[in-house]
Structures are given as C-alpha cells and as structure tokens.
Length: 290
Image 1 (cartoon, rainbow, N blue to C red):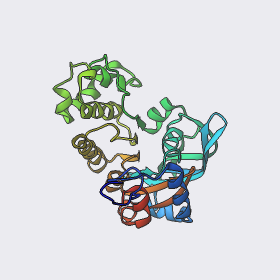
Image 2: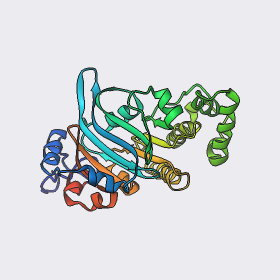
Image 3: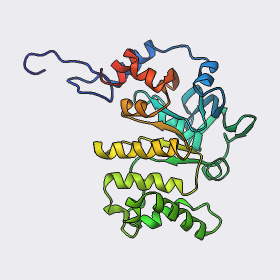
Image 4: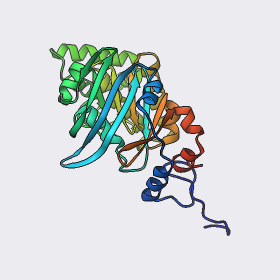
C-alpha cells in the first residue's frame, strides 16, 4: 500500500499489480465461473471439422492423474491458446499430445474428415514423423555449444539422410536471414529473441503440420515477445500450421489465438473465441489484470 491507497487485486499473470491473487484463490474463483461445455460447442469453435481431437483424455505423471476427461478440438490452420493458473494442466495437455506423460484413457486423433490417425500410443518420434507433430519446448532447449547451423541439423534427426536435414536447414535460413547471418556462431552467443527463433526454426526442419508451443514469451524482453508472435502468426496464416499454445501472458496469447480454453484443475472451465475471452470481464479479472 502506497500513498494511503488501498491494495488492489488485479489478477493472475497480467497487468500492474499492488497485490497478486494466490494460485489457490485464482483456481477457486475460476472454478466458480466455469461453464458447462459441450462437444458441440468445441466442434463449432473448430469450424465443425477438427484437425486435432482429444476425446475424454485422462493423463498425468506416474500414477497421478492431472487431466480429467479433457476434450479439445482445433481445426487445421487454427490456433488455440490454453490459459489458467499454475498446475491447471496446460502443459500436461501438450505433453500428452506429444507423448511425454502417461495416458490412462481417452484418445488423441490427428487428421481431416474421416482420415484421422489415432496417435494416442505413438512415441514422440513416431508422432513427429507420421503425424507431423512438433513440440517447441520452453526456453533453454537449444544446444549452446553447437553452432546455429548444427542446431538446425539436429532438428532433422529423423530425416533419412543427413543431406535432407541440411537442405531443410537452408530453407529455414532463406526464410530467416537473421539466423543465416549467425549460422556459424555458437548458439550460446545469441540474444534471447534469437534463441527463441532458433528453437522455433529447429522444429520447422521436419516441416510439421501441428506445432505445440510451450510458453513462447517466457524470459523474453517485450520487443522479442512481439517478434516471436509475429513469427507464429506467419507460420499459421502463411504456411498453414496448426498451433496449440500454452502462454503465461494470457492477454498476448488470446490476442494471437483464434480460440482459447481456460483450464482449472485438469478440466476445461471456459472455451471461446480468443476475442470473446478477452472481452469476458470474469476472465479479465482473473487472468488479464483488469
């Protein structure tokens, strides 16, 4: 409290704050505004023809269940942002799609129309090679002692021949001259924004159709955050990538995404268009700092 002003509670992960709501309190309040969400609603948000479908998924780590009967729908060339308090299960969804945790029941389907592939039990390598799913990890996933060029080659580790990975890397360099100028530099000398660009670019070497993006803005200065979201927007709008994202900066994530889900305690509490969630005063109070 300063200058005799009352402390204000502004929300979670956004806005100017004098006092921050605890995660437990955010979870309690978010649960209180949760809505009944039907499969039909999720299908409608995905335009009626989802490219990614998660059906009644129960998943977690070891024997601990984090996700409880989760359903999710995303159309091809669409973006979905997952927001919610810490521990709500946001990253666990990405891990389940890519094969990083235990799935107890339910299905994950990738594909158009009737031509869908059940990827539930595939390994991460199989998901990348057979279903075109790439995972862009949180910060610090590059190899700092390798050059930028070598990091990109590592992104093509599933290519049949090393030459294929090198050709794919050249496509990336053509697209991002900023990386091309630093191709022989060790990755550890890159700026934060350049490292994030390299992490995204390395995932592109296998030309995936679905990008799982975990906290793209984490640890970045504002100018680099804008750059990263511009890159993601280009990948979606111009290259037709489908994007499922977890983003701590809920406002930035929802401004970017076509649709958004609010997760609470391993379940979808609210689902809607990104713009509609931004305009929702209840979501704003808890997650957007106002």
